[in-house]
Image (tube, rainbow, N blue to C red; front, side):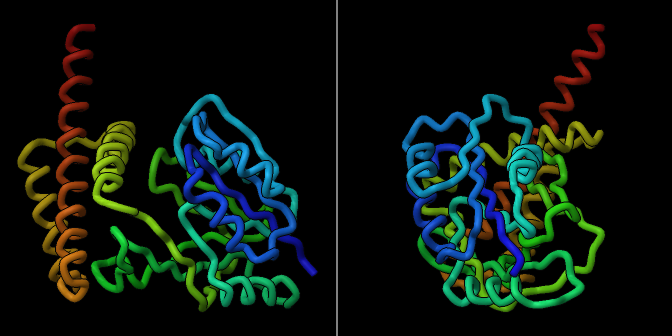
Length: 258
């Protein structure tokens, strides 16, 4: 039987971490939690539940942080989870069966079902949502992105059938908090890649994001939450481009003064 490491990165996840770990149903042979400056009970919860706990004092993005967690994993296979994600019992069974079977694949995508402010979203571009999270250790790594990191692998990739549950946005207060955080990080990442923007591009991107989510991807079928999610997608696109424009202007001004 192959062994499994579960890796989780955290910052102030006391409301989520215990439920995340408990959802594993005993399939993990090792749990690695890498934490960045939590000021709540996250470290105590991780240690109480038997996780291998590692604290970092610097932040270079989600991808880099997950690669730190990956470097601490020691089992045959690795499952990467966010603290607000949960395995269903059916998915636990499917992963357990995978660990005792013979196959050529070195990585697997999981079918993720996400909630938005208390309701699961079945359209809007959020479903179906396949995320590569399970892989043979030594065959994959995370891209070094500030946000929207991904698993990079050259092996054969399969798909599991059962759901990974994602409690992504608890309420609208959390929506606003994540909106500001992710758009700032995304704008900085785009600037690093040499991209530029302006107010007209920001308006165009925002409008297109709403149309794509609500109309083209069936957000209207998700009711009022589908409309709210489409509006959120528009805001994310708008503020990413607007913040990129401001960063680009500041960078040009700095170069002009040199």
